[in-house]
Amino acid sequence: MGRFLRIKCECGNEQNIFGNAASEVKCLACGKVVAKPKGSRAVVYGKIISVL
Ligand SMILES: [Zn+2]
Image (cartoon, rainbow, N blue to C red; front, side):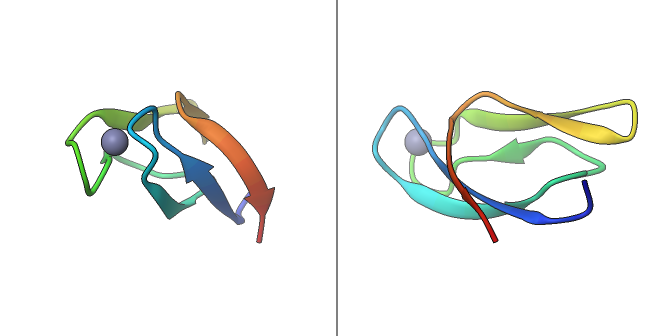
């Protein structure tokens, strides 16, 4: 899953993240963690809008 995902945070901010992020990804607007690495892929806590 080496792709970019477009996700939406609870706060409404949308941003693109790497599908197998190696580190925590935080929302650029509110700072909430929206994805965490787990094994070789990321666990997304926001809503996945699309796969780019
Ligand atoms: Zn947010």
